[in-house]
Length: 104
Ligand code: FES
Image 1 (cartoon, rainbow, N blue to C red):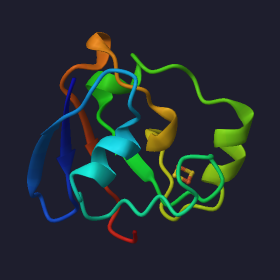
Image 2: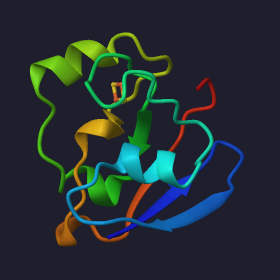
Image 3: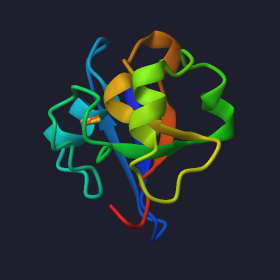
């Protein structure tokens, strides 16, 4: 599936990743800046925080409690904030657009 990353400066990077990979893994394997993923996807660090565009946010599975409480540790959280290690790619999410926060 295709993932489109926007950074806070407005730069856009498009990557291709296999279904079943997380958006975080897609970012790391393509060296997308702004996603650190210190915990390696265990939903325990909040350094993979992204904003999901309006178009896509409704297509994601709702946050579980763990993601919700971990997001409290992220800076600049908004309604469309998600931890991208918890977003698994599939055909439904082909072309998903996310923006990395400035503080990360
Ligand atoms: Fe640590 Fe997502 S990679 S919470």
